[in-house]
Image (cartoon, rainbow, N blue to C red; front, side, top):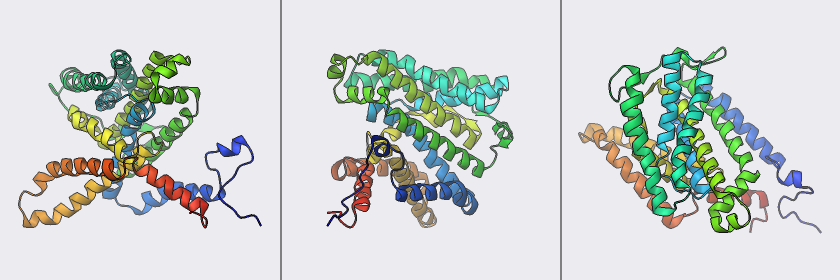
Length: 356
């Protein structure tokens, strides 16, 4: 008597399919239906804004996942390409009246080139020196380039806020005007970025990055051009950061250097540590978890504000406390991140009723 012990495939194509079983197909179709129709129809603007923040964190952490998780290049300055991409997109629209979609592409490429420029000194250094180089990108870009040079182009003085009229964010006949429009645009971008990253990891480029991450000396001995692939990783990660910045512009209609300070770079690294380093879904789980935890903390503090004066003013300190505590607890009790636990749950479901 033959008993099922899991999912088996008869050919290579089926084994590497995106959605391998009918159960997964149904699950993913339902998920897309909920994300693209149910939530916009029945969720209010407050929670849509919360979901937009989750999506922005996912997009921002995607480039960090590519650098740290897949290539092994530690970065503490990823907020720089995010901000540079947002400013490039905003200035293209503000100064030259370029349509949003083309400005989006300009911002993405500009962020990639900035990351590539600062990636040049990073390809020959490791560890502590790599960290310091990426931190230099953060401070030079945000505190000097954005604050002292690109910000004043808006005519508001040093470090001025650059505002774009909401009606200028149009894609063909569709104008991204409301919170709901920004949410739908975020879902579309997240799906495109996720598909792009998943396919990229299956290519020769993705395998070269993972070989460099595991052992760069052995990879070079096997013929992998380390300099080329590291610079390519910096460019693509920076371009993904530009995507996040260009999206965030549609959500707020303003851009300021204060949105891309050093704590945001640290936050994105923490997101992938909690979600799972080197996992395709790590930055998604990390973004949902950390943004959700902070929202819960804020909902708890709001009633206390009437009882204890000054409670909400201390939210930033409490946020940093929760962030640091979450990283410590995950490193101790779940060092592989939430994605590893999700992988175990999926295996349990797929092997049921013989999950043992």
